[in-house]
Length: 528
Image 1 (cartoon, helix red, strand yellow):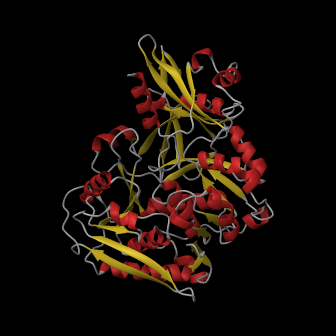
Image 2 (image 1 turned 30 degrees about the horizontal axis):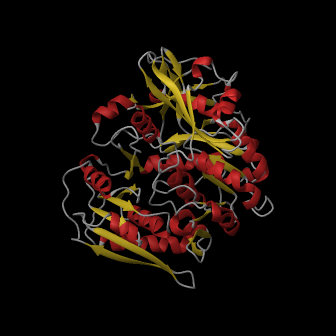
Image 3 (image 1 turned 45 degrees about the vertical axis):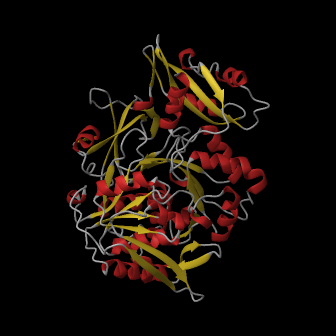
């Protein structure tokens, strides 16, 4: 989209999750909304809305009532989209859940929520994860005729509904649309309620930041049960009238990505840095070129993208690579680097606010001046009211409706945000405070290194020392000493890793960020 086209940009006219399709159903009912399945089946906005309405009616007939909470267990398939939108149109509160969770963790989440039922996809894996639960399961399967008419087959297993009095159900409000679970990498997952107003404000901010419109299309790289995939990919595309391709088998595949992008006519995509690195490494053989996939921009979120990787990706793809910053509590996106014609691109920043208010606060709770590092606080219409059934965590993380992110960062004179790591990740080496994210960025910039993780190593003298694990493209050519040599002069002496190992891979969470708990557990096990 050029500057002239941007002048015609229209913000989405939505009030929440239930009416996210309505404008385009009225204005462009035959336009593509979804592409999915092995045969790359296309579903129009009119057909998608009709199927979601059919789903809403089926759900209503089971005895579920407006305001009831339901779990959604499904991969990135058409069934996920229709279950989500149908439940929203029926007035239900939806909690998307990772379908790969062990059954015990799935059961705990559903019980804490006070879910009245489970919505599930058609796969055997989805059914197996939720078998044996006491609440009813509503399993659906979508079929599309040659004329583009979609129908949804619904099968209910178990009693119609049961009265669930426990969990967080009593804390839900009439305006709640979603309950998202935090990753739980540092403790029990928190339940984060998001209202329709939160959803509308977040989606509007994302659409406006990237000027998304009916001419845009993307591939759903990220899982839809996380905020990154749900808000930035699915809901922003649906609200703006764009098209989303859901990859075969409902998950990202580097092998099929560029063919998927060509098929849907992708104009943008968003992913975590790990996936960007995979695509970059395979670009020499896989990338079809900007003439085949003419991208307007590429977005990166959910973990820090190094400056070197961003530049390499932008050069290879011939499109700006924009880093964004967000988390579930502010309904995903809080800031983003701007499109080229909308502002100055600053290396190392995650851009300016896309609708939230930001402030940087020191350890005394006082505002920091421009350039000073402190904790990032977020406030505004996208921010949740707190955590369900967890007043202690709410008190710790919220102050006068400001969300205390736990991230360290600074705002420059222009309002651009620069992150400096997580407070809880800081390594304390004899009083010297070290940001593992900073050391990781330096390591990742070394020749041959594709990914790095930095962690504290327990030490009786200093308390903690710096340890690191790196993945390299050619283990036969790059060794630990060569990597450390490249770091000298870029890191302070106390920041230098005192233990560096080369590994085949690093553990990641479901959304693609480094799994620091898994890394920490492995380090502790090795030290015993």
